[in-house]
Amino acid sequence: MSDSVASNSSSLCTYMKDQPRTLVAYVKYFGKVQDNVVSAEMSGVDSKGMTLSYKLQSGVSNSVRVPFNPPLPGYDDAKPRLLSMKTEALDSLGMLKVPKLTTFRFPPKAIMTPFIFLAYFYLLAPPPPGTTLFSIPAATVDTFFSPANAIKNFTGLGFAAQTLATILGVIHTAEGLYTLSLCRRSVKGLAVTAVYVGCSMLFGVHIWKDLKIRIQEKRTEAATKFE
Image (tube, rainbow, N blue to C red):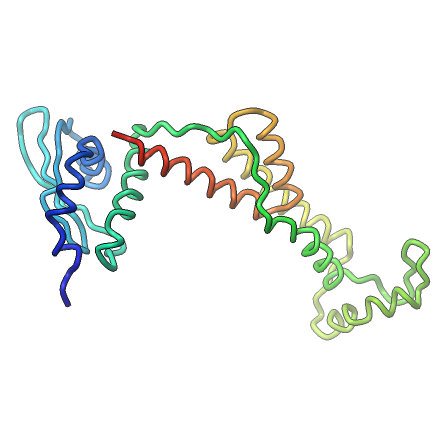
């Protein structure tokens, strides 16, 4: 089976000639060359990796093979992978200046969290038969929660409402702290940070996952503009 990346090696090498600092970053980060690299060029590329020729400040020239992990499925995947590797290398070497986020974005999926909470409490912490809730007659409460109690009796799974609330509170507090760690690196402004942390504690995983997506988008944008 032919290697479509290797077949287009010359065009990819020409494409990368306009990004000399990126090639140096590849050599330093992925090639693990610790010496002072002053120039680099891509001398070959295939689906399994790229060969980079470089020159040190001392005048010594050498080359290094940088593998693609995983290998590229085809030629169309080459430039996106090179951009992803560029972002990683520049960021790790401290060469990438990424602007911080200054706004909050609420992901639509997060609106499902309150309904998931209610489902948790309905299925895992139903009140025992004969319980009156908010002046609602016990018979009505029993009828409403009878499926949940049947499931609880069948599976043996269940918690007291206070215990379940504590478990969910601990999880969402941890998510809030994780979001705070992301905000300290990538968000500008106490108000925006506070909203992100607060919403993570209330709405959970969808908030910080969307924040990570936005951070990565900013990193990619900064890497694209680099050179």
